[in-house]
Image (cartoon, rainbow, N blue to C red; front, side, top):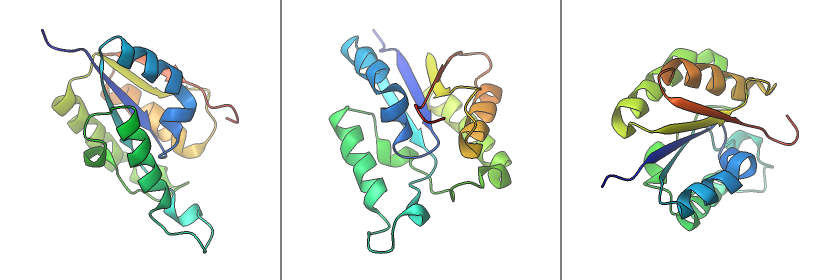
Amino acid sequence: MNKKKVLVLAPHTDDAEIGCGGTISFLKRNDYEIYIAAFSSAADSLPSHMSKDTLANEYLVSADRMEVVTPEKYLYNYPVRIFKDHRQEILDILIGLRNDIRPNIVLLPATSDFHQDHQVISEEGIRAFKNSTILGYELPWN
């Protein structure tokens, strides 16, 4: 029997865990295969004394602990706060993810999220996965 697949769309490398970590854990315990696509490691937002790959490395460690499928394959490096300038590229990636993974469920930022990057992932995610089950997750500060 094929496992059911869940794709989590995370604008930044920490959004999946913060926004829907409990749901990911629940689904994993219920034998779902979990994929996370993170669109930015927010490297430019880090203080100058920190290595630029800090958040990407933390994401990979976290994904490994959650037993996410090939997280490094779905880590992109868009600059923070200007996803809107890359909207079409992001939509193309999402369509590729849809065709590659064929998820049963897609988790993405809620449509009420006001962070500009989260809005792009939410809107383009809905566009790309309009024929799928889509659930929105909330982040405490958005």
